[in-house]
Amino acid sequence: MENEQELIADILAGDQESFAELVETYQRSVYNLTYRMLGDAREAEDAAQEAFLRAYQHLERYDTSRPFKTWLLSIASNYCIDRLRKRRLTWLSIDEPLPPHPALSSNEADPEDAVAIGERYEAVQEMLAGLAPEYRAAVVFRYWYDMSYAEIADALDTTESAIKSRLFRARQMMAENVRTECHPSLVVAIEGT
Image (cartoon, rainbow, N blue to C red; front, side, top):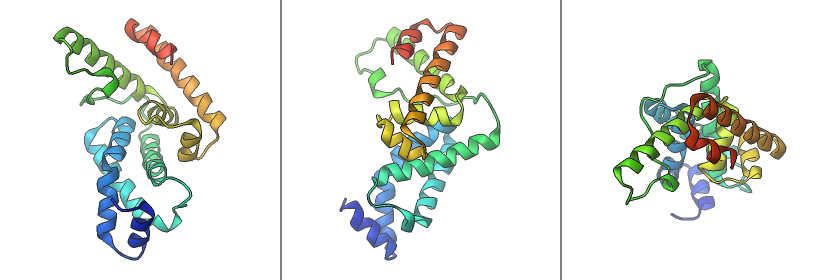
């Protein structure tokens, strides 16, 4: 891929192929974020497409001093937060489990371990779905995208202290959920993060 700034200049000059190149580069990251936020594959696809459409429509507003990926993910997360607020649901059903996070999977796991990992992963997804959209976005950015507090604050248009507070509260809520729902194998992992 050529330099992002050159691609953006080309897009602003009307070159749609350059935008297709940006979409190809970031489509997986955007979809992963929207899926983790919304919990539904079809809805996540729609949200990812909407995020790219909004990015294209507002590209002239992009501040080139910020990373493009952060700007794009903030558009996607804000769109998902809006959709979740419109739903006004506390709990979302996860009909389709996500593939395991690379840190939780191994090519050499025996069947019993694979089942345990899958159950833990589903439990984490359920707990994520139970968080308020702002908390969920902070958790996904921090633990799936390994973003710094400053990057998350920038993406969610808030302060670092607000992000730290959201993450602290989210971990507390998830730990309480683990205790209540009897997921003992997760208690240590969540409280220890």
